[in-house]
View (cartoon, rainbow, N blue to C red):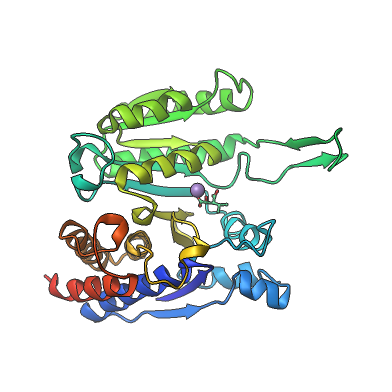
Length: 351
Ligand code: IPM
Ligand code: MN
């Protein structure tokens, strides 16, 4: 296996190092070969060279078996240009239309809601990842004046909506999840989201064993907090998915714990923690590497290394439950020490 590793900016560098430490430990434990090739794409690199992604960059990425990205964002790049090219560019150019974000509470004590057990918070979000408000269609007229007009269009295509909603139903069927909920804002966005509703209803009819439910996104946000146990699979558009997966991360115990995969099933896909680059914490050995590790476990699972992925997840859960983690989850370990602990634990969890 050949993996492209883009540690990126800020704490992305810190957490990626620990995630890759654990990946190496899992590969070694199972006698597997894995090549981790680091690409320097980051704000630093962009500021030094003026290049965010080299001209053949996306083609190069397609040659790997998978891609891992740490986090992107740096106050020195005010318009976030490099992050758009590296992260959103990879999503669009590799057509990674499924943003898969599991929301799984590992330890009841980390849930900000009262009296919830780990079983109450266990669902997955499928966020459409190639369309919606992220496509950069729009423009500004008379920018910087009091007459400024700013337009940002939301793109919804039948093909784009159909493939992500279908993916959600297929996932539910294949993984014994009983319910699929589609969330939109079709009561206000009566054109774009009418398409979502039509596609959802027609696909729901094709999966009679899966319970299909439609919610407006505002109601979904309310219900995710009031009673998250009612959700199995949630599917929604790009921006709504972005927002509710931060909410989902909070239910799990914070951004440091949340994982994601950006997938085009059957093709080279990309994995990244949900957390940002947190510039003030960079290099301080305090960032929680668990979200990055769980993202790397999703990557191994996607590549067919089920046992290695499961060993990583179990090791992470053991660490979190036993309090062997960073201060944000009540531990007293640093980023690196958490990595050492979990890497050692992976070896212990061998079958
Ligand atoms: C995420 C992030 C990105 C997004 C940003 C960095 C552009 O918030 O992956 O959730 O909005 O998709
Ligand atoms: Mn986000």
